[in-house]
Image (cartoon, rainbow, N blue to C red; front, side):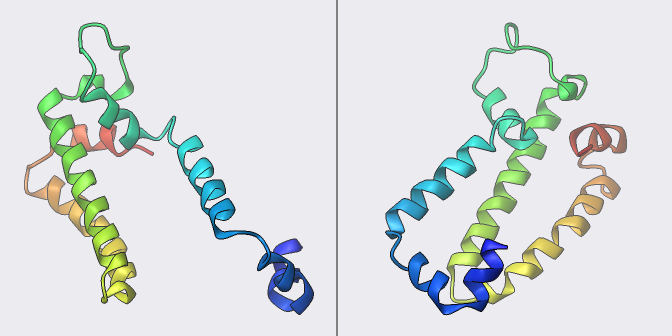
Length: 125
């Protein structure tokens, strides 16, 4: 209801303009970093820097490490492409990049880059 009030009425919107931008950026930074633990892509990125002998076994431990690293690198490349498009003058095409993620996943599977059983484990959620 507060968000609706800020959108529909002038007084709440005027109050929001009094909040310093740095406070809002800090809030969003905190929310973003607190959401990272449990995110599979983040956990696989951290696993790249861990010793596999002492690292706890994750669900994707059944997948060969080269396949896991390749899939994670492709995900990081897609994330980089999304950020690049979003920040560029063609930022309005950002939804097109998002829409191309599903065909990319199916192409990785069909072309044999990542086997179906590995893809099912890596992209379960």
